[in-house]
Image (tube, rainbow, N blue to C red; front, side, top):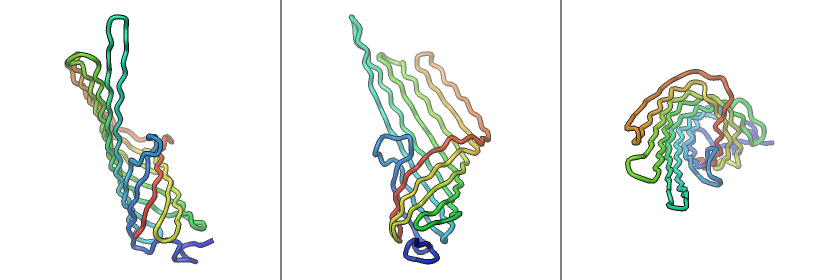
Length: 193
């Protein structure tokens, strides 16, 4: 089995830059919704800025004997994370890594039932500190595939709701620490230079 020590061609030479794309679960099947740049400082430490995005919409229709009603729903989200990756151990082409991260996420939703001035709009914004584990498999010095699972350690969340029916706006916020295991799973493919 080749490792970085016994076969330097099994990994990218450091320092190196990897450009990647992948998906963050849950997501639509086979949708690439995440991009990152992996900067390797040495064989053990890498820094990875990550950008994620999501957009979805749906429409439902209700027909009665007298009329038909439609309702539209849309959501959009944006995620910006920075991960520090530390290779704890490696076996063959696979490296096991510990992860520490800082992230910013925003999610906007809009529900628009039939009629005028009856939209419900929400905006959720979160700042998180996370921890996790990852596996990275190298297919030579230029390609790698990785799977990561990160969990929130600390989160500060703000929630804004605007209801046109009652003409109200409400804001809620909170923060706290958690050791619960509620992972965000990410699969990525990187091309290394």
